[in-house]
Length: 227
Ligand code: DX5
Ligand code: ZN
Image (cartoon, rainbow, N blue to C red; front, side, top):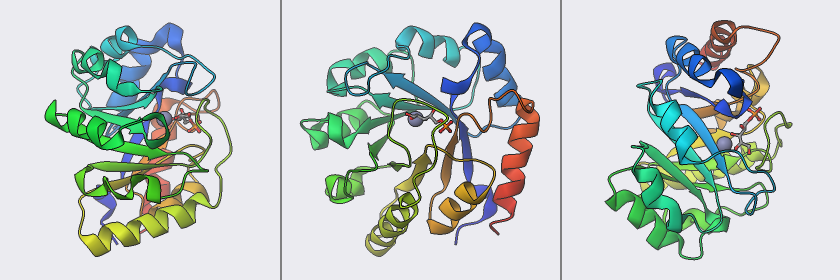
C-alpha cells in the first residue's frame, strides 16, 4: 500500500460556479488541491458541451497547481496542439474516442506532457493494456462521462483492483486515477484500498452545503482513514 501523502485530490471544476470561476480555482488551490481536474466535453463523444481552450487558459491563469485535463472529445488528436498552447500539464484522452490510441498517446508524450488514458464503465481493461507501459495515468471512469453529481458505480472497484495487479506485476509507472461519484466516504476509501492514487472530486468539493476548505478537509480526513 502507498503512503497517505501519495494520494492526490483533483477537484473537478465542472462543479464550480462558472460565474465566479477564477475565485473558485484560487480557493481550491489555497485549500490544498494537488491537481485541478478540467473536463472538456465536445457534445459528440458525450452529449454535453462544457468549454474549450479559452476557459482552460483562464483556469491556468488562476493557479500554479498542475492541470489534469480530461478530454471527452472524439478524435482528440486533432485538437492536441490547441490545448498544448495553453500549457496543460497532464492530458487524458478516452480509449473509446481514439481511432489510433497508440499514436495519440505517443504524440502527447512527445509534446512533453504527462499522458493518461480514461476508460468508460462499459469498456474493458484490455482497451488500454497495450499502451499501459507508456502512461503516467490510467483513469477508471466510475460514472458514465458527461456530467457531475452522478452515483459511483460499485464494480469500478474491481476494475481498479485488476488494473493495479497488472501495473504492479509489470512494474509500470502508471498511477490509477478514479473519476465520478467520489465523496468523502466509502467511495474514496474503497478506491484507495483498491489501488487508486488520484481521486477526482467535483460535487464533493464544489457544493452549497460546505465551503471549499471544509470539503477539502473532509476529503483529506477520509483519505487518512485509509491508512
Ligand atoms: C464526468 C466528469 C467528472 C465529473 C465528476 O464526466 O468527467 O470529472 O466532473 O463529478 P462528480 O465528482 O460530482 O461525480
Ligand atoms: Zn473528468
